Length: 154
Image 1 (cartoon, rainbow, N blue to C red):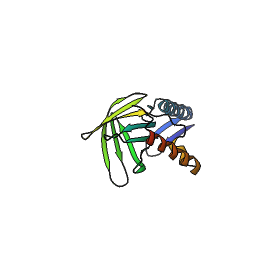
Image 2 (cartoon, helix red, strand yellow):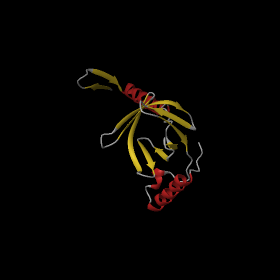
Image 3 (cartoon, rainbow, N blue to C red):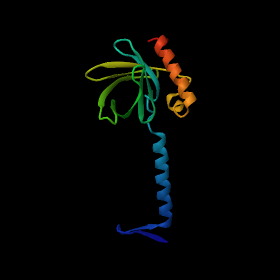
Image 4 (cartoon, helix red, strand yellow):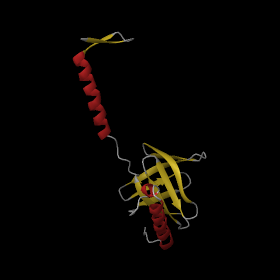
């Protein structure tokens, strides 16, 4: 039995269709496994130039900056090669060069500043905590303690 792709004038044997479908599925599965892991995923902390402590929480599409004065603020981001593009709904955009990335820290810089972020192991994940008011209250208390005590050492 032959199939004809209308508009293309191509005849395809039934076995060829199944073979082609299998090839497409195989390539799709292989490409999923080859997707690079985002090195920024997770929780990070840093200090402002005035030594103010703050944290970043990063998931697949969002970076949340948590500062004691302004609270958590979300930014969309995209990584392309060694550049980090950050933007928000208010039209703010900033482009950072990612200089160093390891499991324990990363350094970004632009023409205004350079910032070194350190990995932060948290008992309560920010993105999970915002789904539950009790968890979020616990998360906020933990941030307040880390901010006040500056117990995280560079």
